[in-house]
Length: 159
Image 1 (tube, rainbow, N blue to C red):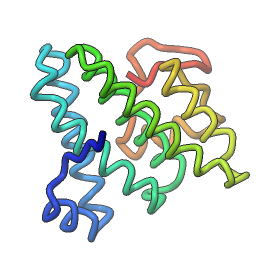
Image 2 (cartoon, one colour; image 1 turned 90 degrees about the vertical axis):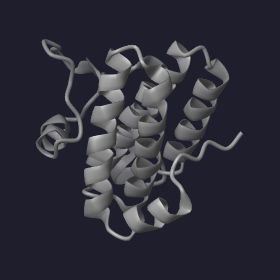
Image 3 (cartoon, helix red, strand yellow; image 1 turned 30 degrees about the vertical axis):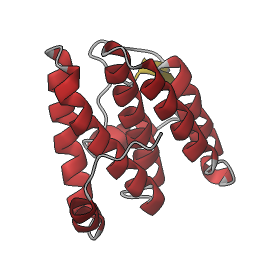
Image 4 (tube, rainbow, N blue to C red; image 1 turned 180 degrees about the horizontal axis):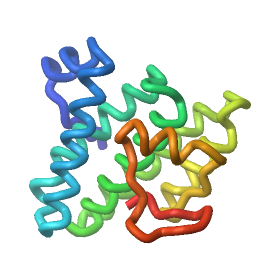
């Protein structure tokens, strides 16, 4: 199974500029989230899938920084998995989970970001993440992740 969402032309155009990719990621995640809230997973999946592909690219480039990129990638994967599950496509959801955890596992060699990466991998299976001090603030300031309203404590659901 190979889940590709971006056409070759859009992939190339977006990946020429990380700022352009970030903006598209933000827009597509928002649109996909709204469609999921409306119960329209079939329309949400293409938006979330494109955002997921961009998040992988941004993680590779570490844009706008590793912590933000890793959490965006994790959030993209979680939302795409959830949309597939709600649509009854558990095979696709499981594929996203396995490929995402494998992608993140390649980052475990970076000792500086080891704990955050391990937390992101765990999040793919639990839906909750324990963020190191200061990470949540940096990510929220980037516009890349918003915790659930009213959530408190160290363990916060990503969506």
